[in-house]
Length: 353
Image (cartoon, rainbow, N blue to C red):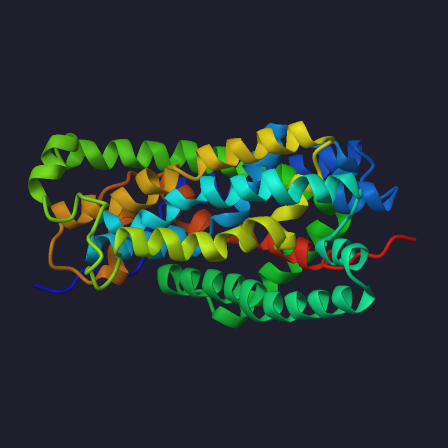
């Protein structure tokens, strides 16, 4: 028997859904940013005028964290190692809770635009310059490079588009969208993509569970992989090792990374920012179900395949036409992520006029 194809099969319905959803989300984001007059002041452009309600803050914060590594990597790791691969998703409430309790009040009290600006107020200009330069280099070499290349690579493996041409096209599209609409366009586009992601991935999970015989059938088919808690001697995902390790780095990620903190700074007050963070924490529980469980479903229905093909297997062999865009091209290519990442890198150390 020939090995399963790693190429995604898209129908005309998928392409129609793809074009409509991308166009509508970008248009609505730009329209709302225009209504907010995003380009009239620094506060409007970089922080959406500090007028983002908590649902927008939370949805944008969630979308900021979700990318190709979740849709492709988490399903593949779950296929290979079991549900324990999603353990790290449980740490958000600790890390974001610490950030909102300790760090966020200091940011809002000082009315800062960026984390480097706060470091200057707390320490000195040298601290600001060093942190801004360090994070800018890291972001260009990791976040921007990873999102652009990974998104293009996924599209190349799925539908054969040239990697470098896709990198250039996505980069130009996202930069133009961000420059025109500012952070408001990014935040509202994030929120729309979050809604599409949750609804589309939720429907995909329901369809997959139905084909696997429901939760009972899935647990019976892969009993060794259904448990998230693994002992300390597990070589891949020891439960408490993952939790403690992720908390250590997660507090910095959620509390000092400008990409994430910018969402919280866009809220009108501390209460709205904290409500948004709690909403994001709730949304962060969904990857366990929406991105990890599809890996177990593929393991139950199609054992013996390469873990790296799990995501495409789920799309091709389980999902119907029309849902493959949201769970496939739209999510794994990271196009919505690129709009967000490019916009955030433009704001690492904004200096007020």
